[in-house]
Image 1 (cartoon, rainbow, N blue to C red):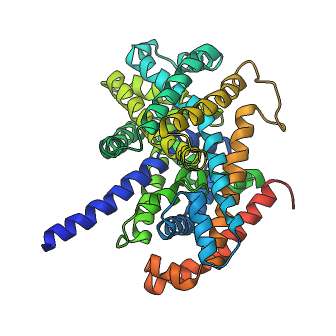
Image 2 (image 1 turned 90 degrees about the vertical axis):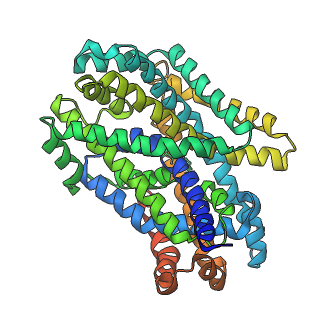
Length: 450
Ligand code: TRP
């Protein structure tokens, strides 16, 4: 093999991993969820805690999850069982894989509804709705969508059908190709929106909302939400990254790839925030308006931009692709389990898993209208599912992964996988002590348990 071939070969396999992993990481979590959570939780202090969680908890855990996947080279449930056996530990570690199947299934049920909203907006923006012209009009348009279960059901069904179609064919090369074009496209569109936002009257107010911390606004629950969002946005705690790690060639640096994926993911979230908050303040809107935030603000930005209808349409197409590459990662553990352990063929497994998500998603659709006043543990159906997954299941899954990689697995093995050299003790310190302790404290405190 010539040197250039070798270099190319290495580069392309690392790139393939980075594309797949960032396709899973970058999604509605960055563009839709991050801004609205920042808005609801008071701004800068929340952002700062979020960034700290990504650096101190997310990054070492992403490395841990990837290394478990590469070491086990099977689906998460079987990987955990195999690695536990190899370490002379209990096969109940498989449970980590189970949390993943459940969490992914639950998350996708509402993810699909929100992805449906962005599909609806694709046509709204493309169909001349921007000519209407005011903040009141965009707010009214969103309320119309929110209060129409039938319209949301149509889009939710279409999104889930598209997910089933792609997943049933096996996670194909096509996805990699689409992601390869879509990611840079999304980044470019966000930068265009940022440039627009920089010229609006609310720019400085938006920036200080986003980056000037006011810790008085931070409650125990918002701390937990910031941490949960770090798990959600990076796609950690449910074995997604473990699956991707299992395809990772031996020579690729786990540390460097994780750093790139986490960096890109964080950049996209911040760029989305920078695009949105100036528009919020320029139009005298409220940052804490909740899940509708991007749908009520971004159309205003597109409205005032030359070529806005075109840019807006492209933007929502890109959001759709970002969502579907994440949806695939979310449903894959359930599909893998149904086909490996229950003997379904891949198509049947995809249809069953997708149909289940679809049915549960009906609850989320209704939670914005018919069931708006119905309480599930003091929250709406959507909020309850979101809280259970992002703020409980993913952090619990994350703690277990950290404990396994840090304490159960032999040091010689993790050191060999990570090849961190002099940095290894720092990773070990974060994975053994800092990350599990921080997650446990934030989790129990946020739940009001101490
Ligand atoms: N990270 C994705 C987003 O931000 C969603 C996602 C994909 C996810 N895979 C995951 C969330 C695994 C939690 C766990 O939109």
